[in-house]
Image 1: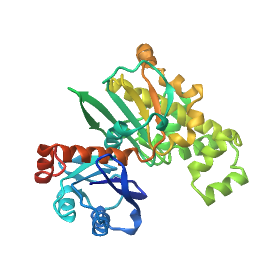
Image 2 (image 1 turned 135 degrees about the vertical axis):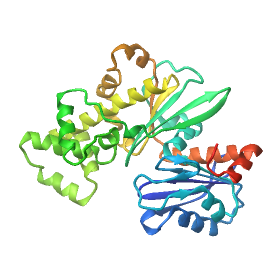
Image 3 (image 1 turned 60 degrees about the vertical axis):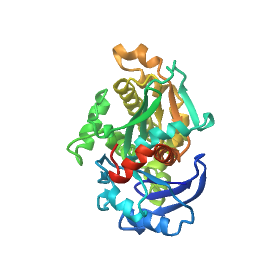
Image 4 (image 1 turned 180 degrees about the horizontal axis):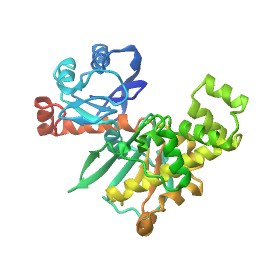
Length: 339
C-alpha cells in the first residue's frame, strides 16, 4: 500500500492507495487544527490499519534536499527525515505540489480533461502544467528513454509582464501593496479581486449592493467570477476577461519555455470553475499572441484538468515507482527527498 498526500493552504488530503492506484481510504484534515505537517501524518498513520510500503507527499513550496519551507502556511519547515521517523521507517519522497500534479497526468482519464485546443501533439513530447489556485504553480513532465520525470519550478513567482496600457496601470495599482508584481499575484487567489478593485476605481462607481453582500458572506473572488459568468455585473465581466487574458499569455509562456509539444495542462482550483470563459476565444487569442511563436503555439494541445485529485494521484504514482524500484526505495529511505 502507498501513503500519498496533497497539502494545500487550507486542507491536507491523505490517502492510502493500492498498487492499482485505487483509493483504499482517505481523510481530509484542516491545516489550522495542527501545528505541523508531521502531526497530521502521525495522526493518520496511527489510525491506519493498512501495511504501508512507501509514502509520497505533494507540498506547496520548493523542495530542496528533502526539505520544504511552505509558501503559504506558517508551519515549521517540513523535513523528510522526520517523516521517515513518524512513519516508522517508510521510504518518503517530498514533491512540490505541481510536480506531483505533473506525475498525476499519468493517471488521468480522457473524461477528466477538457480540450481547449486540439493542436498536433507529439508522442513523448514535453508537457507543461500551469495551475492557478491559492497561488500559481508551474511544472513540466518530460520523457527520457521512455521514463517520465517531472520538473518542479517556482515559475509562478516570475515577474509579471503587462501586455497593454490597461495592464500597465493594473501593475501600478497592485504596487500600492506589492513592490514587485509576479504572475502568482495576478493569477493566484487574490488576483481576480485585485483586477475587480482596480477596474471599479477606474469606473468611478460602487459595488452593487447584492454583489457586496455576496462578497461579505463568501469568497470575494468566487462572487466576482460567478457574477461575470452570469453576466450580472459589467465590471466583473471585464475583470474575469482580464484574468483569462493573463492566464492565456502565461500558459503560452510555459509552452515556449518547456517546448511543450506534448501539451499544456491547466490545473488548479480556479480553471474548472471558469471553464465556460476559458472556452471562449479570448483565452486562445492571448495564448497565440507570441509573434514568431504563433505557428508553434497553434500546434500545442491545451487541456483543462477537471480532476481535483490529480496531485494526490501523482504522489501515489510516484510512491508506486518507489516500491517498484528497489534502488529508489533504498535511496529514499537513506536519503529521503533526494533523487
